Image (cartoon, rainbow, N blue to C red; front, side):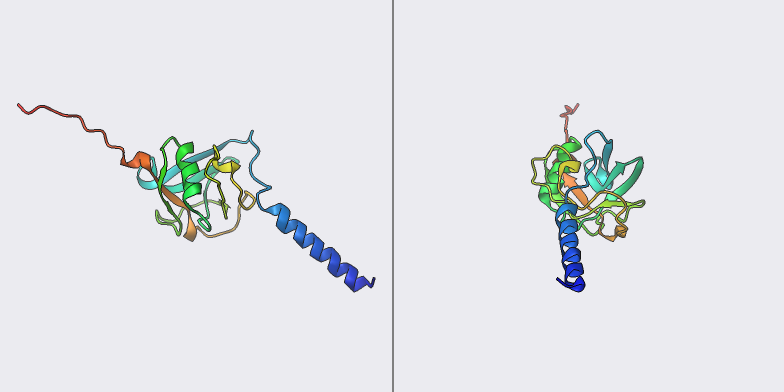
Length: 149
């Protein structure tokens, strides 16, 4: 085999390994503390998704963001099921790092960090596609009957 063909083969195999092992392999360890919150919405169960990872607050890129992803977040926050999943910074652009993108939850995961995604870290993405959700917990209204006098 010529050097050029060998080099091409090594590069192709390396790129294939990076592509196949990169997706979903770099989530936080279970022992790592990851906190979630929703901001800029009407309640604690409505807003832009922000995560605290390695001591910093940041966001999640909304590319591929959908209802199974939103359901995991809503459950993790104790807000019931998701009613809507938003991308493109529906609740305004966040600040800090955009920690991950291409989140692909099956819907049954207990926590966002269990879902497949691009590796966690500062992705370098802008905040123009920050993910957001509306959870069922937002629409729960408790009305007490007050007798008229």
